[in-house]
Image (cartoon, rainbow, N blue to C red; front, side, top):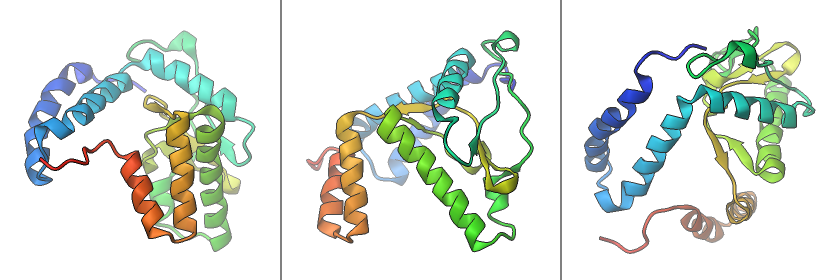
Length: 195
């Protein structure tokens, strides 16, 4: 993985262009979105730090390698740098492409369960979460195995957020809309007071 020159330099100017459009599209106030844009900028800067990504990739891979049905590439620090991340080439199909093809219900269930187990293990055991789970970062390999890459964006899950997340899942399973609404309000960063 090689980083294009100037990517980190363009983040601030790109967000400055997007911000007024987002505020107008979603009818938001600048005040209530300030912390979100700041967090997005910080996370995007983290994404450009390949030394940090290498450390995270090795740590998550070591912690999750025992999970059934999950594989990760090996990483090579000796051939990596601030703008180059070297890892194994993994033969597979991007999850976005895989789901467009033909597969059995059993295969789909197994892959879905594997992803669920991977994310639940991170949240409940590691108190971390792979925060860039788009289908291009997840590959379906042979024998119903998935491979995950791109640990440049990893979120830390504090105990309160984890507990709220468990409450949200409970409210969904029990179809308790009032509880779900209350938990969603607790999980958001939006101000409750109208402007």
